[in-house]
Amino acid sequence: MGTLDQLVHDLGHPGMPVELAVLLGCLLSAGGISWLIGRRQSAESVWFGRATVDGLLFPLLALVLTYAARHVVEMSQPVVLLRLAIPVLVSLAGIRFLARVLTLAFPASGFARLMERLFSWLAWIAAALWAVGVLPAVRTELDEIRFVFGKSRVSLLNILDGTLAAGVVLIAALWISAVLERQVLRQAVHDLSLRKVAANAIRAALLLVGVLFALSTAGVDLTALSVLGGAIGVGLGFGLQKLAANYVSGFVILFERSLRIGDTVRVDGFEGQVIDIKTRYTLIRALNGRESIVPNEKLITERIENLSLADPRVLLSTEVAVAYDSDVDQVQRLLQEAALATARVLQDPGPAARLVKFGADGLEFSLFFWIADPANGQGNVRSDVNLEVLRRLRAAGIEIPYPQREVRILGGGGAASLL
Figure 1: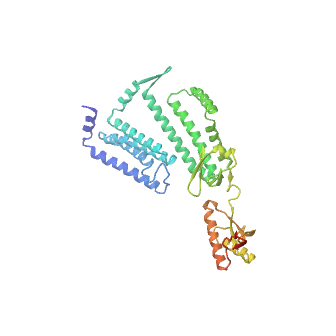
Figure 2: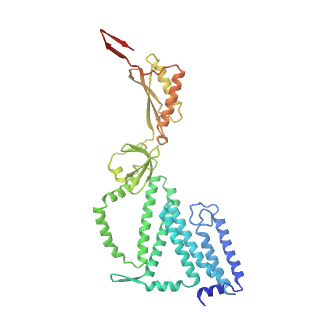
Figure 3: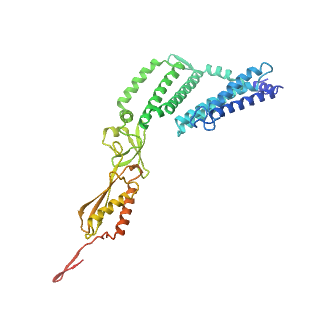
C-alpha cells in the first residue's frame, strides 16, 4: 500500500470524530483568545493583523494547542488528523508572519507581494509533503544533488536551507526594525526627518547583521567577503561616485535637518513641498500636482531656497491703479482693510499699502501682506485679496481707470490730435 493510500485508510479509523472535535476546539479556543487579546490592538500589529485572527498569534496558539492535544489524544487512540494539522498550522504561521511583516515594511511594493505569494506556494507544498510523509525522502534526494564551487561541494539541500534561514533572519530583522520605529522612535523622536534617518539606520544595521548571520548559518566563510568588499570599494571609487555621493548626501540632509519633510523649497525655479527624503533622492511636489525628483547631491552642493527653515511666513503683494482724483489716504485704508478681511492674511505683521508710482493712467499702489501657510497656495490667497479690493473700491466709488492713449495724426498742412 502506498503512502497516500495508507493515509486515506488511517483517516477512516473510528476515533476520527473525536479528533475532529478536538481540532475544532483548539481552533475556536485560539480564535477566542486572539480576539480577547487583540480586539483593542492596532491594525499595524504583526500579532493580530486587521481582523484580529489574520495575524501571527492565531496560528501560533492553534499550533501549540493542537500539538498538546495530539499528545493527550494519542494516549487513548491513534492520531491522524491532529498530526496532519500540525504542518498545516506551521505553514500558516510562516505565511502570516511573512505577509504581515512585508505589509508593514513595504506597504506598496509589488515585489514584496510577489515574494509573499511565492513563499506561500512553497510553504503549502512543504506542508503537503510533510503531511503525506515524503518530506524526509525529498530532503534525502536534494542532499544527493551536489554542486562544486572551487574546493567546496554544496548540496542543493544546503542551498535551500541557507536561503530559508536567510529569509527568516531578514524578515525577523525587518520586523524588529518596524517594532522599534513604531514603539520607540515615534515616542522618543518627534521630528519626522530625524525619525526617518534613525529608522533607516536601524533597518540597515539589522539587515546587515541578519545577512551575515544567515550566510554563517548556510556555511559560507565570511572571510571571503573581504575580497568582495574590496571590489565593491573600487567600484564605488570609479563607477559609482555619483550614486555614493547621493546616498551620503541623503544621510547628511537628514542628520543636519537643513531640509525637512513638509518644508516649502525652491530648486532651480521649481517650488514645492518636500514630500519624502529618500537615501538617494528627494521628492518635491508643487501646488499644481507636478512632482520633481531631485538628487540629494544637488541639494548639498547648490543653492537651495528653503522657505520654511527659519520662518514659514511669506510676504506677498498685489498691485492696483486708481484715478488721479482719488483720495490717497482713503485708498490706502481700503486696501489694508481688504487684506485684513481675507482669512489667511496675518494680522501681525499687518498689511501695508504704498503709493509706488505715478503711472500713465493713474496712481499705482502696491499692497503687501503676510501669510503663514504657503503650502496651501499663494495664488488663491492673492485672488481673494484682489476680489476684496475690487469690492471695496467699487463700494467707495473709487475709479480703477482704463488705459488711455493719445493718438496724433499728422498730414496735409496742419496737425490734428485725437484723444
